[in-house]
Amino acid sequence: MAAASFDPSGFFEFDLATGSVHARGTGRVLILSDSVVAPLVSAAVGNGDLTSVRKLGRELGDCVVEQLGGGVLDAPVETVLEAAAGVLSLMGWGRLQIDRWGEALVASLEQIPHLDDDHLGVAALLGGLMSRLADREIACVPVSAEGHFLLVEPSVAQKVWKWSRSGDDIAAIVGRLAPPTEAS
Amino acid sequence: MSAAAQIAKLEALLERIQSNRGDAPTPYTGSLDAAPDVEATMEAPLDLDEPLPTPEPAVPASALIAAPRRAQEPTPMERAVSTELDLGPADEDDDDEPELEISYPEPDEPALLLEVDDPSESTPTAPVHTRAPDTVRPEPAPEPDVLLDSLPPEPEPQLEVEPQPERIELAVAAPSAPIAKVVARPKPKTFGELLDRALALRPR
Image 1: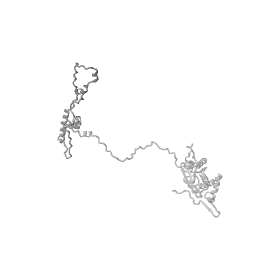
Image 2: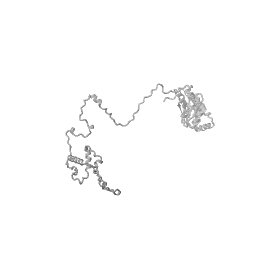
Image 3: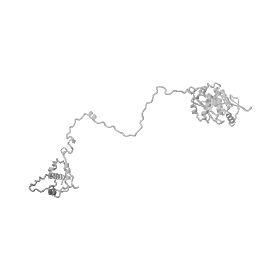
Image 4: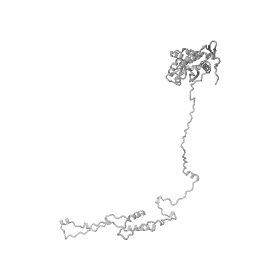
């Protein structure tokens, strides 16, 4: 297994004198327990406004971009994803995995924090992260109860969400998607 | 008495019986025809001057019945059958005919054995047209090759073996062109290409 290009050393800076924590590439961060964050995320889901969570994801993307030194889109796939997985791990959001289902991308998080029943909070976080990396809006739609998210264009997100809620598994959902040249 | 002697005795007896055969006896009708008709006698007066009719001589039975055919020469089998038929209970009135006595060989008596020295001299028992030719001319010995050709083909030995599946060999189709069209593009090299492909997907 090749060594990861992401080096987590010195990612956090604890200033005990001032009582602040800073992450590399970001501003001041707070260390919160999931039992505190979960009600906040659930409330945002209930209100239908996950903007704050999505903004948090973008900030994690900034961290990744800083780690990579720019040029994310032209960077190798593994380099970018390893950096993103490293940042998420340091922030305590679980271990990121990316699977290719044909042309589709499915992200999954191991040891995902349970913030809401449908993982919509984590979906918003990942959407913010990937949108920052791609420099365009990306929707991460939960497609399983085990923490799998399908990366799609935002205009397709609602339909994929409906398919997932109706019981379609990942294979069925991916099978319903096609490149533009083959789409009807 | 030996069997040959018995057969000779039976044949002599049959000839004697054949020679003694005569016309069958005819019933006597003279007395019935001669019976006077009483009523006719009463109506017609008897003319004593009229000469009495002379009765016709009796017709022998042999004239009314077809003359017995002259029996053909009986075959030995017919003789044997007729012997059995004529050997019924002996006629008590005919004291001249000897009674047939059939004696069975005693267990101790040796059985009759016909010793034939030369088979060709023995009396043929099969009909003439079914007899085997008396003399057979030996055919010239054929050449070995001809002999082999004339021999009937030997049947192939049939071996009983367990039935086993016999697969029919099929030729493998050789494609003249690629059998599949590769539509999958090579893996994306960059993160941007990866995202572009994923975000381009639309519902079918």
